[in-house]
Structures are given as structure tokens and as C-alpha cells.
Image (cartoon, rainbow, N blue to C red; front, side, top):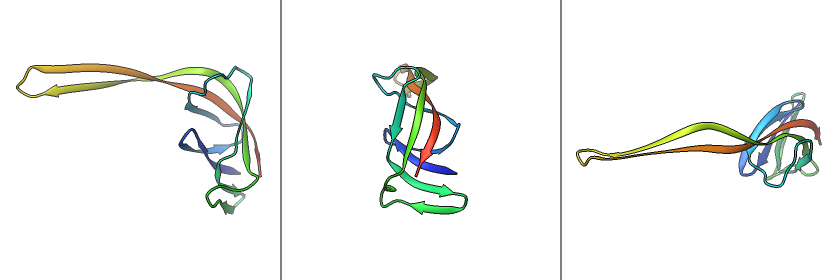
Length: 105
């Protein structure tokens, strides 16, 4: 059984026991329980249920494993040819690591 769930504007395919890295959720602690109710699709053993836009009564219960995890560094390089202009910026996105405990339909 899996679901497509929308978390902080992004869609994730979630199964029970799976770990997800989602955009940082402020004011969470390790071990806290978080529920997401924007379930867009449910597939229960080949029986697909598509929401309009969400499936009513369905939600995903997750446990926070790590409240802040930094992602890989992304380098942004700007250059203008023949002008001698170069600029290099770096960024590391903050994520929250969660584990899917159960899927309620």
C-alpha cells in the first residue's frame, strides 16, 4: 500500500516504514508525531482511489527522526563573458527527516 501525499507544497510517494526528507518544519522535536492530511492518491493492493483534490478521511502519520538535516551544497555561479564579472554563491537547504509510521484511509 502506498499513497501520494502533499507536504509543504511537494508531493511524495509514501509507504509504511519509509524515511522521507521534507522541507524543514519549524518547532518540531525528535520523536514528535506529525500528521499530514493532504493525501492525493491511495493505492491499496491495486485498488486505486484518486482524490478530488484530496481523499477524504485519509492521512499519513509520521514520526520526526531528526528536526534539522542539512542537504548537499548547491553552488550557484554567475558569469558575464568578456566583462571580468564572476560571482559564486553556495546554499545548503534545511530538511526534516521523518519516518512514516502508519497510513490511515
